[in-house]
Image 1 (cartoon, rainbow, N blue to C red):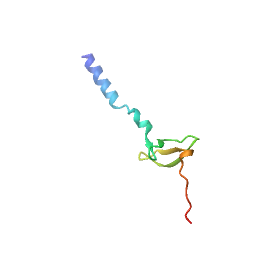
Image 2: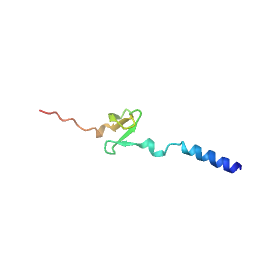
Image 3: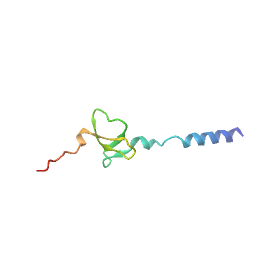
Image 4: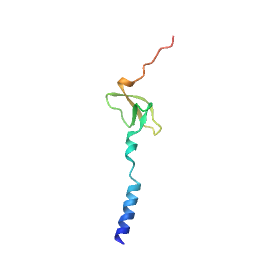
Length: 68
């Protein structure tokens, strides 16, 4: 009986644990990362679907072209 109770508790706990992949959400064609805050070596491009920031390293930031 105690093993059954332990199994039920373990299943309930595991059901509430987020998957490991949720911390590594990608954006900007897989080159950026969705995070709550960007590091000092990254720039913010747009919002991800879950309202976090899409952070890109400065080397990958697209160059804005001026229209004449």
